[in-house]
Image 1: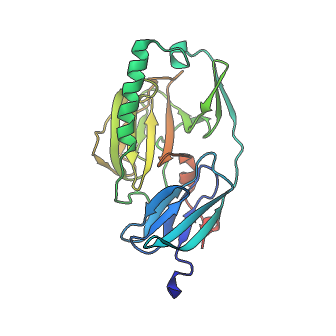
Image 2: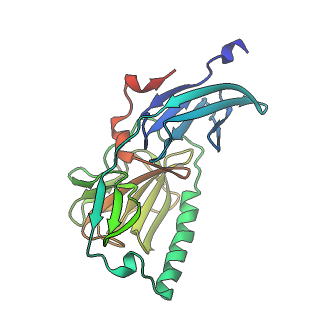
Image 3: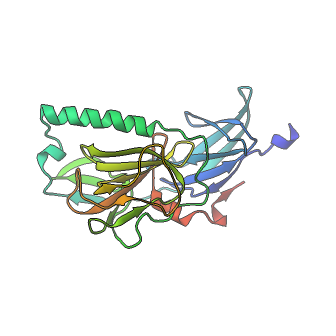
Length: 263
């Protein structure tokens, strides 16, 4: 067991909304909170820190169900902006007809399938590029949303304004797990599975150029900017999830630097 005194090395962004890529023994079983993990054949695995993650997270390394090692990861907290959006139709905020509720439930069922994708191949290792080449960021990750004066869940995406038809590019390699142009809130949305539960999201698209199951490479066009669904103007809402945790995709454009390494 002498070689197992410190079997986990992680490199990433250690703050709320951040992501880390870790290395350990190939095929090792680990846990992060209540999430069970398994390293791939090269000993690599991804972890993500939710928008509201605690100041410290703990990775537990196990062999045959026995705890061998624990690593504590200290996370930096963040302050989040307040985002107010007025003028939305009531049917996009809180007042829904029976027919709209049917559409919402159908959309949720299809999204559930897309988010359940678990590519075993670790497509993501080298950070993200921005999905647009020319844009204006209008809302940062994690902003508290006030819609028509009513407090709602935080906004888990990064809003990027650009004209309708602006090309959207894959920020990293992955597999398309969803491409749907008839979702109630999101309008037209694409999901890219980057491996081990890391899924990026592209909302309110005007056109979609990819299909579920298609492998895409960094820089490949996946569609165009639009304003479908719950949207007040042409923009891309860019989101990232790891399992059920909401992450900041923009942080991965800074991926990573030496000071972000945990031994």
